[in-house]
Image (cartoon, rainbow, N blue to C red; front, side, top):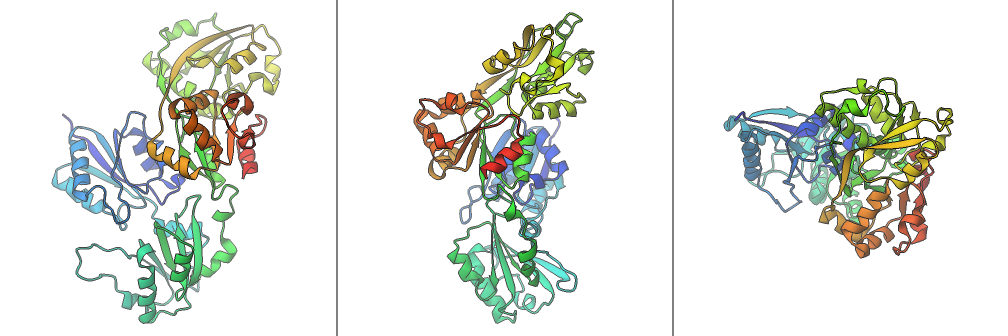
Amino acid sequence: MEQGKVYIVGGGPGDPGLITVKARNKLESADVIVYDRLVHNGLLAYCRDNAEKIFVGKEPGCHRVKQEEINRVLVNKAKQGLKVVRLKGGNPFIFARGSEEASALKNEGVEFEIIPGISSGTAAPIYSGIPITQRGVVTQCVLLTAHESPDKQSSQVEWKTLAKLKNTSFMIYMGASRIEKISSTLIENGLNPETPVAVIENATLSKQRTITGKLKDIAGKFRKDNLKAPVIIMISPTVEYRKDIAWWEKKPLYNKTVILTEACGSKTTLCDKIYDLGGDIKFMPLVKNKFLHPGRIVQDVFNSQSPEWIIFSDECAVENFFKYLDSESCDCRVFGAKKIAAVGKRTSEVLKKRGIVSDLTTGEFLSAAIGEKQDSLLTNKSSAALLIGENKSNTILSNTLSKYFSKIEKLNIYESVPTKPGEELINDLNTQGTDIILFTSSVSINNFFEVLGSKTAANILNNCNSIVVDNNPEEYFSNRNIRDCNLKSMDNVKGISEFIRELA
């Protein structure tokens, strides 16, 4: 058996958009992902559906999986001939144990590669509007950890030497439990008690919080505001610049969490727009989309007598259609001169990535009507159409299409299978609620109630601020004990960015 390979990958500081292109490519093709507690679940959404995901996270003060066991998992999976991504928060070689894992792989003769990531110590100040260096003010920076190995007899951090440095920014990792000791030690060794300090919690995420103060009083502010790990402590004259250039907390969706229930999660522009507005996404896929071979030869489907229009119902239809072409050793030349329509801008964008520019694009969601655009291309009802999509017919879409086409055929290219979200996410939503739950199809709404049960589903929905659906929310939620004030209908003419901005 050919031996596999391990990629030790830095996942970045939190915001999934900060992962490198190379790291994302490895995630998309990996057989196994071994990941830590601080890895954003948006990164896991890049993985293949059939990839094995192994959580080895460590809670503060409670090591759930020993490092030796993690090493064994990496070695064993690679020796099974699998491609393994060891996904770690931040940069795997900055106050992490990536080098230990690399050494263990080397000793076992396992091939490995290291992909660096953006470290939280350098990203956190930037997302708080604090320069790490500043001409004429700070000319050097020091990265240090407040959490050293328990095996050491004494600290290796030269606090006495550090306290005497001038024109320096200090970025301190893992200092939440020792902020009082850090402050007093530096002051005792000569650092000015008036030195500005910032403490940044959950850096680069929508829930990021930043408090500022002086070295002499920052510990008290930290405890008063009840900040929790993970935090970055920055001690630097440049903290004062935050007053002018803080930017992240001004985003319209700052401190807002959006639950996204669609199956084609992280690969959509919808996610990019939510992140760009400062929101955080928790993925709660309620359906698993499975490729379904139509049982027909491609050439028979796209012959000269086939419908003039080819309509893709959603982006999953596009992805699975190309699996169909691959299985038949064909490519997009089968379309010939036929016209292409995409239901939703995201569907159109996925087609464009495949080299196909749609002749017609409708609104944002699956149930958006083809005819809502009132395009001049559809004035003649004599044309026939082939609808490529899910095996369960979409009544709203089909009924609307029948107004504009003389005949509608359907090519079932995938099927949706209900799937239950993880218990951890369900419990979190039950107890803490969320800001926005976004349903992009009636199928996901029905599955939400089916897999969670009516009582649990209603409780979760009543604990969130807004439930967003594409059309007619009252129709979907009637007789389900949902507060009407939570229901919001998406205007198909308006872009998702503008609509969610209004919710904020």
